[in-house]
Image (cartoon, rainbow, N blue to C red):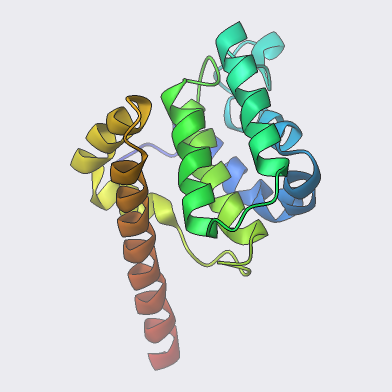
Length: 176
């Protein structure tokens, strides 16, 4: 609420959130393409046109390719765990020259929607990450250092906070 509406991060986040529904099918068959599209809409006002949708480095390109291969493989992992890994990989690289955090958080949300945990896209895990912002940075550093468990627990807490918030909104709407 304190961020000016013209802020490029806010504008990018709003555009990315608007893309989630349209990208579900793309995510399922070509997650790298969906990430590139997310970056293009997130960074449209802030990055050089030639950088839109392109990994920030050769290392980022290799890791994003490996992430895509991992996502294509069958898994029994829960949507929450997969969302945490996607978010952690994209954010910790950083994957793109600008806006990797917004892309990462939106991609995490996209995983929750595409894997059926949040079919209607009612959850906003970003609310939980904001509520837990002091923990967010240290948990992301832990992920980058190989401590996936700390990061997954943080992401679970963020989704729990988002669910609490969504329930409060639904109850307020029901009350009129």
